[in-house]
Image: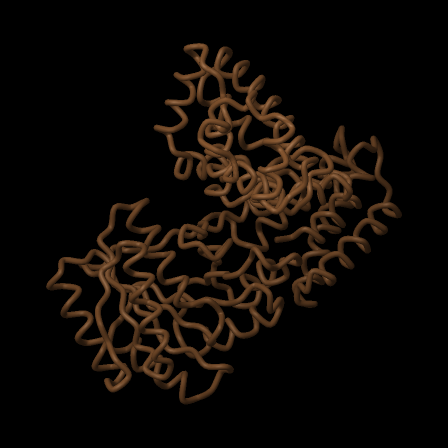
Length: 454
C-alpha cells in the first residue's frame, strides 16, 4: 500500500530536506505537489484541503523557517500531521466485557468481512491467548456460513453452527448461550453484507446490535474502494455506534486514500489492516508507523514484531548451531530461509517496511519480487535430496535435468547456485559474529540475483 503516494512525497520532500533555508515560494510549491499526491491517492478532497492547510500553517511559522535544518523540520511536520490525520496511536480492542466479550463485524458484501473474522480470531487466540468463538448470522448467503466453518477450523476457533432457515436474531441469542457454555472469552459475530447500503440491512443490524450489546462494533471495508470506503463507513456509523474500522485488502491498494480518509470522515479509528489473503495477514494499525512508511522511512518495529511471531526459532537455532559447528549451509537450508521469508508476508511486505526502499530505482524494484523466490523454491524442489545436501555434485547434466523438471532454464539454475554460494558465505560470517539475530536480519534483507526471472 501507498507505493505511488510514497514515491511522490519522498521525491517532493527529498528536494527540500537538505536545504538550509526555506522560502514561502518553495514551501508553496512543495504543498502543491503534496496536494496533488494526496488527490492521486484518492484521499477525499476536504481531507486533503485541511491537511495541506495545517502543514502550510506550521511550515511558514517559526517551527520550520527558523529551524537549524528547515528541510528536515518540514518532513517532520508532514509526518506529524499524517499521524494526527490517521489517529495519534493504535486503538486496541476493548474486551473488558464479562465473557464472552462480543465483537460484531459489519460491512458490505465482498469487503472481506468473513475472512476478517477468522483473522481476528486467530490474532486474539495467538497473541492474547483468548478462547474465541465465531458465528455467522448471514442467512442470505449460505456459502458464508460454510466459509466461516472452514476458516474457524483453520485458525482453531470454536464455530457455532447456524443455517439459512433460522432468523438472525435467533442465531445470535443461541450463539451467545453456546459461547457462555463453552467458556469462550470472545464471541465474534459475522453479520450479513449487501451489495450496497439499504434500509432493510441497517434495520437488521441495528436489531442485532440492540440484542447483543457488543463491546466492539467493527466496520470492515475494502481499501481498494478509496475515499468511497470512508463514505460507506460514515453511512454505517450514522446507523450504528461503530467503535472502529478494519481496512481490508490493503495489499492490493497502491494508493492508500482510504487509510488517510476514514478517520477524518467518520471520526472512528482504524484498528486493523488486512495485508493479504492468509489468516495471519492482519496487523494492528499504528498511525505513526504507517506515516513513516508513507514517507519512505520504513517500519522497523512492525518488521521486528513479525519476525518474532513468524520466524521458526527452532529452525533458526538449529541452523545457527549447524553452521557454528563448521557444517555447510546447504540448499535444504536455503529453501527453509525462502519459506521463512514467505511466512513473513513475502518480499513486497518486507521491502514496504524497510527504511529507504522507496528510494530504490524502479528498475531495481522490479527485480525484487515474490515470483523470483517462488521459482527458486521450485528449482530446489526438482533436485534430489542428495543434490540439495551436496550442491557441489550438480554438474552440467544434472543442471539440464533440474531445469527441465522445474520448467526453467539452465541459466536460472546457475543463478540460484550463485545466490546460494553468496548466502553460504553470509551465513558463515553472521553466525560467527552475532548469532541468530544477525542471521535473521540477513534473511530479511535477501534479494534475488539480478536477472532472475520472476
